[in-house]
Length: 235
Image 1: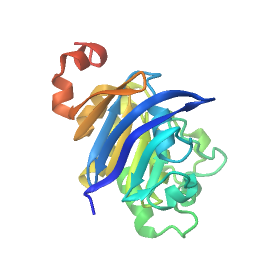
Image 2 (image 1 turned 30 degrees about the vertical axis):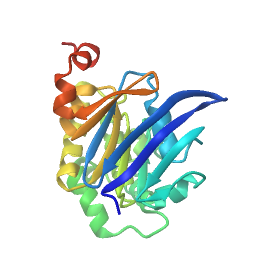
Image 3 (image 1 turned 90 degrees about the horizontal axis):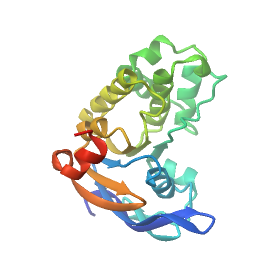
Image 4 (image 1 turned 135 degrees about the vertical axis):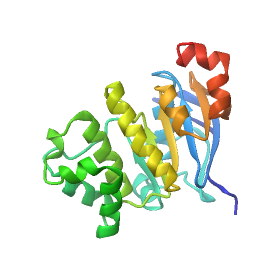
């Protein structure tokens, strides 16, 4: 058995017969945090949706813990431990924080340990446990989306643009919580256009540009790359 929990090999995907992701290959090892960085429209969301079974790829392979995911329904992929948090969050606005969290554990019953872990990472959610999700701030909604995913007991957590719609301060708060999850040993694949946040969190990264992987390396290597500095870091 390989140490690599996720292996994406030559993945291509798109819409209406037109690929926007081309021959993408990447790996994520157990216990590792990997970032896919790129500008808006580079294909990050399309790639993640293909990995998670929400979009059928036009070519290539996705293997999770040695199992090929081609043709597997998205809900079965999620139950296998690969849990996806979309940029849009998709909360249930007229349900409480607690009810949204409990739905993350469905179809099993949520445990006190699961809920306690989420409240430890996101204490603000415990303060607002009875509040309707639709009345939370943007940062709190992002915390709830991640917390709901954690209730599913993910083996691999996939985050699509977790800083979307957040002020710089709230985005930093959200990433601070992700750092704590990393310390707990959670395996994470994150796609992000806020490159400094992603590289501070990740062990390794991939640069996606116009649907193709253009560069890969450790976070420190990517942060030191002149092309990455010009394009994403304002240097």
